[in-house]
Image 1 (tube, rainbow, N blue to C red):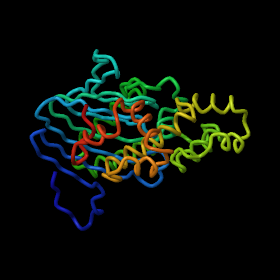
Image 2 (cartoon, rainbow, N blue to C red; image 1 turned 180 degrees about the vertical axis):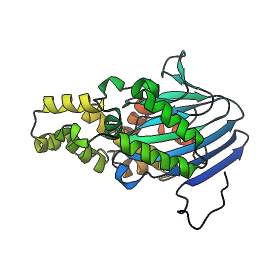
Image 3 (tube, one colour; image 1 turned 180 degrees about the horizontal axis):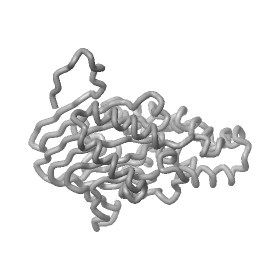
Image 4 (tube, one colour; image 1 turned 90 degrees about the vertical axis):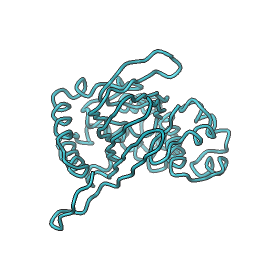
Length: 294
């Protein structure tokens, strides 16, 4: 998607990677959102993909929850451990996950993915998201007409930068006031995210000043996951990012780097959250942002 740069326009913000091989070809464009959105949105990703054969990828629980606006063929979303296809979704939004899901793409696809924080999804939806845990939902079922309007505007965007600017505008007008979420939950979320899951739950409970039972119930109600599981998912997500970036060739080093006691703790969480071993996961990684196929 080449565009001649006009000196009067801002510099392009999207970083674009392209891949061509026997697997097929894909283009990935990534950008950070406008600064005011960054506590709630980690990244925008645009893609164009033409695969030689259908590809099933593992999508992992992390501290992020995606909104995927797809302009191409529907995705087949599977439940782990079940051979049955769960359902087909063209576009989808998720809440918190504490397990992986399998997403198969068939045919040409293109679209935009917005990687929200769980707090961001909670504020975008405008209500507690406990009922969205481990679920992929059609955006129109969650947002009504807003989903269709946003899809149409993104589809009409003439470049990745134009689409990402459209997202900045649409999300800024839609995301609610963080004060709608109880201060104790926001404080805990901040502490856990800032420490990448290493902060002690007990000390957070003391700081918040609630009973432990009330704290856990409120956190789960608002964000759809228990604080302890969220801490584990944060650590696991840090490990997945390190694997994607090709860091820590030695898995024992990787485990310590991302906050595990040792490699066996990393292996336990990778088995639970990804359904495989750390070594197999690393070997499965596709180049150029292609993800983790099964």
